[in-house]
Image 1: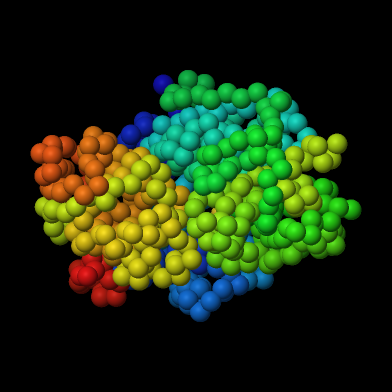
Image 2 (image 1 turned 180 degrees about the horizontal axis):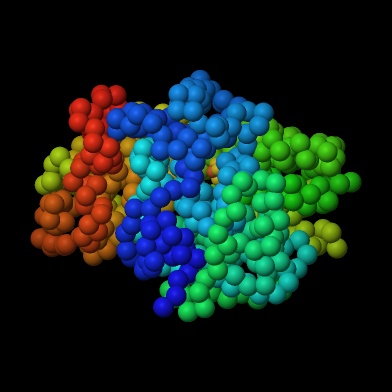
Length: 421
Length: 182
Ligand code: SF4
């Protein structure tokens, strides 16, 4: 019996020829990623563990993104703790303001993840890196400290669900709509402890930006990871970024899948997740015309250049609706620079958007656009739990960048296909 | 784990209780259990802090602790004096975090289904036995896999790693790992 991609990567890192779902292994790690919000606790636990050194300072990444630029003294102190840890243990992949960005945008763009890698990150959306054919999953701060000390982590081999997308995506429909549809169908725990393997001609032709979005939200269905087989598009993306070649795993033809989901996407509508769950997904036709106070474009889900190109196309020559606030947050400094070069910052600013420095900010209810009592937002982020983005009575709808931009133009939830004709 | 048998009242919740409602990110600039405890569950159940007594249990549905990886969530629950969380199932990162920091958790769909708010519960953690003293029913929780039992036997991940690294000196004081007294 063959293996899925997730099983192949775990077997290779556990040093065994074959793994089967349910087995537990300690496996060696290629990258351990932490952020300003999770690293300070890990640093303290690392000291309690009596560890003298980090297993491999080049396999550790530390990223300033969540509460940056420091939103208050407590946040500044967390960042300071991470900075000191990086200095003390010689962490080379330490990202400071000015060259940093949201971890899941930055880390793959910096070439720190290669196909076939086994990665853990003290952030639940670490599964994003599955888009380059890696097995990547989120852990907590104590697990991260243990990973720094040991260079390995324990894994229970997950069963794999195969998600097949076939057909050509309609205009203004993209990766976010694909994954929202899947999360809506599976529910918040439909893929709990599973790996999701995304396949099919839609995925093969989906640009890397869309693949990152798809894998990013695997966790929203409870999945341990989401994986897309690395291919020529991955190779092209990694050129000039990654220093290692990686292993381009493909699933065996007789690999065992616990479940298979199949979609024909050629008639897919833009999707929207309604409060208070990313699994409360509806086609846009069911939520259209709902007034919105604030739109946020950005996050590790949709903070890439491609996302802002879509938004700029829609907002060019259309102002932001006067009753609505549009906040645009480039996913990283590199994304910000590219948006400047392409004139997209100018388009968005002229339309009436507020441009924020790269940060998680409002995605986690930190700063830069927290919602007040009863306010309604439409965000391109990945979670809309009660109270996550501001006051517990505020509400957030989740969508892709096209719906978000169309909504920003009209002040109410709008189908980009009707707006753009 | 320190206290293998304990008794307390059940505080019940439904499915998909996420870490954003267990402890909102706006309080996650702290990772001190006693500070986090002051805001535990406040967006989901503003009465939680008033009604819970030290030693009480949380009993919940499927996928408890889903969402963010924040370890602040089990820390907040621990800080609030909750002795144990029983759920139909746990989200995987929350499960790992709880094992790692030594927050007792038990997975038992049958128990979670049968226990109602206010029921008096007795838990024998070592045996994985849950007794509903109010109704007289008893349940056996899903056993932990062997690898996880090794971490639990070491009192959590800190002890486990210290043993792996061969560190002999006692743990440095610093992070408050005990449950709050109040
Ligand atoms: S952008 Fe949002 S989901 Fe992504 S890492 Fe930041 S807080 Fe988490």
